[in-house]
Image (cartoon, rainbow over all chains, first blue to last red; front, side, top):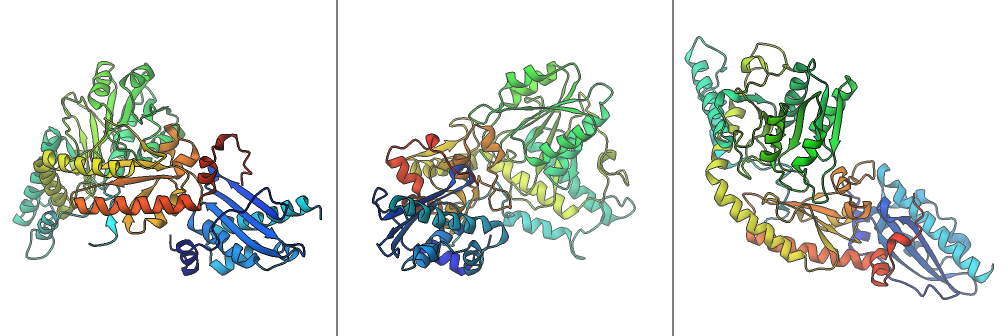
Length: 127
Length: 404
C-alpha cells in the first residue's frame, strides 16, 4: 500500500510519544481499540485549570496510518481548550493525512481517543 | 548492497538467468517457435522434442514417468484439475473429499465449489505446529471418500507434512491422494512412488522458472482417471487442451533440471541462512516461531513479534521484501487463516512475518535483515501501549477492550 508523505513523516518521526501520570487529576487518558482488531491507541492529555491542554502524549499499537493519526492528533490538541479539542473530527485527520478509504477507521479511532481522554479528565475534575 | 532485500521467495522467485536464456531460444523467427502439435514439419517436431525433454526433466525431479506429467498454467490450475477432475470422475463411488484448513486457496476454493455442487468436504485442523498428522487423515476417511488433498509444504509456515505416511494410508484405503507440491518441488526430496502419491501439482515460478506454467502429475499405474476441465484440441492426452506454450514449458523443464542438480547443496546452504536469521532475532523477548522446529523446508521461517502490529512492522521493514501474516493491507482486518488454524490469537497472527529465503540470498542479506528487524521491533515496541502494559505485568487477556 502506498502511504502519503505525511503518514510516512509521522510514522518515521512520531511526535509526542510517551506517557503521562495516569493517576494525576489533571491528566485524561483515552485508551481505544483492541489488539484483536490490530489497533490500540492510548492518548493522554494534561489540562491546566483553564481547561487548556498543556501537554499530550500517545502510544499506538497499529498500522502506519494509526500511528500517524495519533501523532498528528497530539500536535493538534496541544494548546487547545478541551471543548475545542473535543470538536476534532476524524474527517479532518483523514483529510490532512490523505488516508485511503480502508484506513479511515484509524482516524475514527483517533477521534474516539481524544473524546475519551477529554471525558476522563472532565470526570476526574468534575466539570 | 541492493535494497530492498528480497526475502519473499515463497511468493515467487526470479527466473534463473540460465532458464531465461534457454526460454529465449523458443520465441523468435531464428528460434524454435513452432507449435508442438504440428506434425507435418520440422518446426513442430523441434518444438515437440523440446517439450518432451522438459517433461522428462520435471518427471526426473519427482521420480515419475514423463507420460504422467500434464502441463497446466500453474499450480492453481493443476489443483483445480486434480481435485475437480478426480472428484467428478469418481462421483458414482462417493462424494466425500478430505483436505486441511491450511491448504492454499487454490485447493480450499476448489473444495468450496465442489460443496456447492453437492460434495461433502472434511477440513482437517492442523496440530499446533502446523502439521497434518497421518492418523488425522486415517480417522477422516469414510466409505464414500474419493479424494484426499494435503499440501506437501505449507506456504506460510514452511511446515513439511509426512506425505509418504499419508499416502500409504490412502493407498490402503483405496482413496485417491492429491498433493499440492508448489512449495516443495526443488526444496525437498520428492518421490511419487515412495510417497504413494496419485496426483501432484507443481508451479514453475516458485523454483526459478517463469510464471504462467505448471504441471500436474497424474499416476498411470495404478491408473488415476480425471475429467478434463478445459476442452479443445485434446492436447495432453485429453486432460488439458490448449496449445502448449513451448518457451514456458522449456523454462519449467530447465528450472526443474537445475533445481534437481542443486537440491542437496542448495538446501544445506539455505537451511544455514534460515538458522542464522532465526538465531539473530530469537534472543529478543517475546519472539515466537510459528510452525515446526524440525519438520520444515529450509527456505521459510514465520515469526511472531508480540506487541508489534504486523503492517507497521512491514512498513518499518521497507528495505526488506517480506510477507505479513495479517491481511490488513486489504479492506478486511482478517489475520491469516493459516495462523488462526494453529490456534494463534489475532494479535500474534497480526504480528507475524514470513521470511522466505532462496537461491540468490546471501549471508550479508540475512545479517542486514536481522539488524533491520531488531531495530524495527525495538522502535515499534517503544511506541506500543501493549508493550508498556506487558512490561508492567498486565495480562492483556484480562483487559476489557472496546472492540471496533
